[in-house]
Length: 555
Image 1: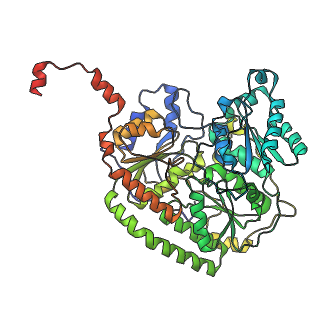
Image 2: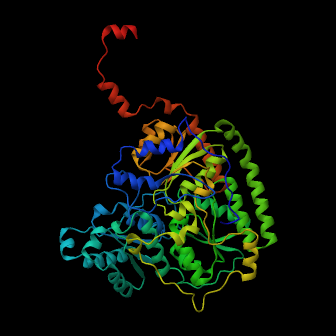
Image 3: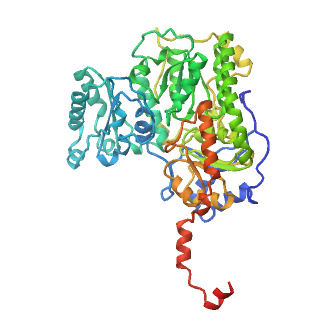
């Protein structure tokens, strides 16, 4: 285990008089035996010193209401879609094209004279005839039409389930279009059924970005400290907040994959001296491939939470081993904290000791525990929608994870060092010196090592389990995704939607942390939640027989 690990102290013996084991039994009670065996592996009390093995990245059991997205959603909706100057075409029936139109709040600043294609929803709108006789001609026509109308720098094509089932060769169509039009045209075989969840789509997307974009432009960049931010999608302006902070320190971001980013930035981003990873789950593949091919080291950072942001800045400065940079970083941290600390202290005094539960996305269920912790709110239960075991237990479990049929379904690229462009960014001696001092490269400790002992970790939580958690442990606030927030709010519990933030954000960096503290304060201070009566309680009252007149009078 990395020496960077900070094991949290204390144990969650019980919440509202109920132990974690008792709550787990309540959640599992009454399930069919096969379902029970599977869910039992996905609900485990935590141990930060020796994280227990958790069931993860396994297919959701039919009948259980899940919050997951499909492979197509992960590829088109999460990773590739936020690149604003690529024209995106979904090949499939229009009913499959929900994510053809961006549904997350990925923001983009578009230079004057350029077009933001994120605002467009483009699909080949396959009909029955195309399902029977094939849709390749229709796709080729759609690409030509899109080019004629918009003249984009690049066009990407996404296959949905019916396309994979009938066997349309979208890659052949894209190669022909690339030759015909003279622009970059590439496809993604990201049919929705192809993996367990949207996580498979992330992998397919990163393979495509690596094969078709990164390294196409070798124009040198002479900035002094050049880095890429990987796994930051600029929801609500998070990437802009991080960029603003790093600029104050004198650090240049070449590309943010993939939020608030352009095609030109991505094809040149292999000029960076360092990759830092925000969402490990969605993009660890890219970090590893760029290190192998170009020699760019990577490590995990977290710009969510005040202390986490300061820690990440210091680690980046330490990597470059430049006193001028380290001094500048300390000045920036001191100035930012001087503004943040009084606000944090005021809000913490009001909410110290309250409890949260977080069930959302790849790394957000982990990162946002730091923000809640900043204002004294403890996370008693958390879990991911689409994680793998290493996201919970840390990357040291990777050799122990068995390859299953779903994993074999996703292409693994054979990456070799580039003969002319591979360049070690740091000498072996300097790297070893950092490692000896406790510096972790190419590592992720996982969520469990930063949660309290006996906190309940729940992978791919169902509505049934969520209701038990709310009724029994009564969390003061829950962080969730888009689809499950409504059931939480109907039960009278404030819900901070952390998938696309609704209309809030940014929450990254110091300025974003202040936004978050204030929003949580407003949500917890309002009395509106006490007036919420769940519909099933209303129905029960309406259906109850009227009491005899004598009893009503006595009451």
